[in-house]
Length: 329
Image (cartoon, rainbow, N blue to C red):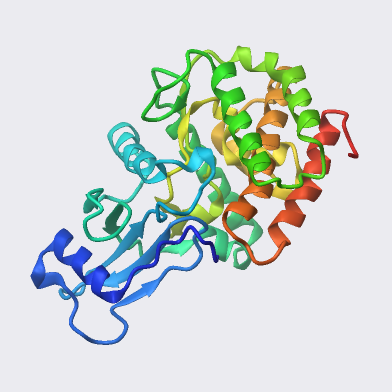
């Protein structure tokens, strides 16, 4: 996926990064094919690199500082590194090791880190090639893994590294307020007035008070961030959007609100989630509103050259607003 946030580097810079991380004896020989870009990511650039010793590793580089990103994306690489530590130390959910991380900006204008290459299938890419039973089994396993991640407790609501908020209402209203401010900054057309969207949030934010314990929320745990093989989840990747909040905000619950996101049955079974209460459903609706707003607004910040994602997300926004009784402009 093309995006102006992808901070591509020259082969010479990549070699310097490899030398710093692994030593001069692991810098690849000057032969073709020692590196290639992994193109399915949406935000950071990632390279598959074959070291001189033959091991394959992945290099992930943060966006360049001159490219404006959405407010919630500031410090995304630090969030990912902190999340990886939390997950490794507190759960059995498989995530990549971090071989080396560098925030000095001496070799390029942004932070970067190396991790091992995971030789497995991307669930999102191969989903349609699997049988119905296989898809359901992986979705159920993903539900159980999500529950394990949510078992991590935080000391505040909001950013993993802080500063946080004492209540979930304060944290979430700030999060969604930042998204709307990002959209207004770029005059992004939502198909609805910004004041109308804010009024919906204000009318329903009382339901957030039911959440009193901060939980680790991966949030971006779609099937495209899950590596699978042999009937198991081999690895979960891309952790830069995690925060402490309400477990019902996880990606796997989104299909409860909108059929366009698939069938949540197997995920819910794996998670062990009971039927949602009326208050929980209102919270879920707010969380899907947050997601769809981001999907619309980020297309401007990413510099997308077509309107496919934006058009799809604006159609979904009509569906979300209808959940609040606000269909139409």
